[in-house]
Image (tube, rainbow, N blue to C red; front, side, top):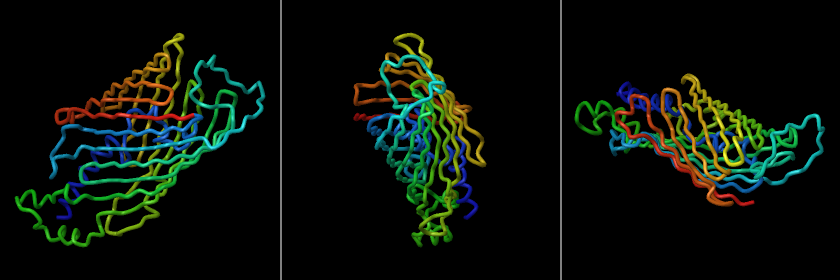
Length: 336
């Protein structure tokens, strides 16, 4: 039974490792840097509240309740606490041309705080995490800032027995006949554990470019609460991303960007995105996630207060015969 249970759960986890590693995957990473890097909180000089939802592998259903598709919902918010203007050495100034409508605040020291809540469910597993973020932003020049940030929180990892079935039960055509599994579940203490989450990052940005380095789950399972019979084995994750905006004319800009993710022992994941933006209002983009998906996207700044974004993942893997793809939608609110 142990071998069968391990194999079944292992296949689920292997699938998640290949496509999203242990952490949720976001297609619109280039416009929502806070989800990956706490150092990005406070890059904009206003309150930023964003609600998002993601549904992967739509149509894939083969578990007890007919759904193994990963589903993610998240909410994050961040704001600048204070900022201080500083003097510059003109020799250090980096010019990127005129900026008609600044979207980020540079050229000053800033302190920023934020918070996020993420619920991620895949197959018979559910993760609920929440944490607080702090970042300090330091000017490299009038147009460029560098920030350092940390994210500290808790993450609850749960196994959902009602959405799982023991392999020996499946082959025998009966239910609840495996004594080892029945004894394990009767204790009730082996299905959930709470872990401390620690993340850190560095972020360099201006109106026209960004470069991000971040890491998550740095404490792995060193600090945990709950049953010792559960082994969810959180791993360190590392991410690097960057992009540069080219102004084609007064109305159009083009920004290529890239994202690289690594978690041992999973292979390196790479994603490349090209975004076109019209009058800093309407944007279109397409991404290629290596060996995994092609992702068309579009979105708009609906007003000075609201934003929206949508993306569709078209699978390139062998799963494309079993699933109709994935959807992600973003809704955001700004307040100066």
